[in-house]
Image 1 (cartoon, rainbow, N blue to C red):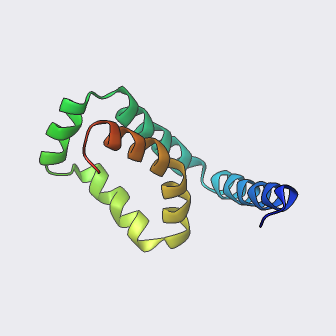
Image 2 (image 1 turned 60 degrees about the horizontal axis):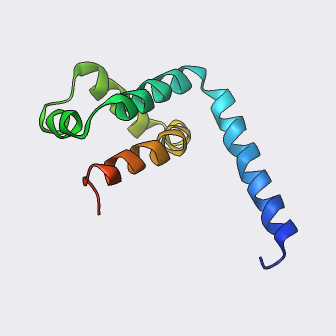
Length: 95
């Protein structure tokens, strides 16, 4: 893909697919936004402390849903991966 217009078309197609997936899961979008907000507003110390605590029942249910629905998992991960990974990197939680 050396041609810039081909890259643009590919990126536009991926964004359209991501937007379509997000529209299919309005509840997932609310949960994902809450997770993103949690990571963005927490200090690194808070994130380290939360990592050591057991998962709540609500978190365990969400994880179960994501494990059982691959399409939902992909849509959720596509939405939260960037913000969470950036925060974890800033906090030294990932190399």
